[in-house]
Length: 143
Image (cartoon, rainbow, N blue to C red; front, side, top):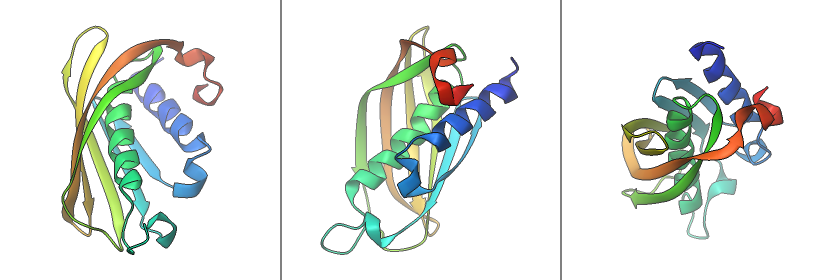
């Protein structure tokens, strides 16, 4: 299997996740990088009327995670830890999370991601990821 086929399979796997029926995101994956986009919806707001922190986390983790999994063809990776910095509130616009791998060994990876809304940085994060024992070929939506 070629790299491009692997990226497209990862994209399909991501979009098929049940949680993404709520977020209706778009994703683009390339070698060591991923970009996730979704429109802000009022359903994503906390009681004070702006984006809930869980949405920041989801998009930043997703972008970093798929940047890492782009480098791992045979196994599903797992998020081990993720640090998050929320820098500004969001009430409207297009959210874009861009992730990239910054360090890797055989089984351990570090990736960073930046979230923008309305062309302004609103959050950033970094995470560590491990190659799991779950084979991608066993994940129905990857096939």
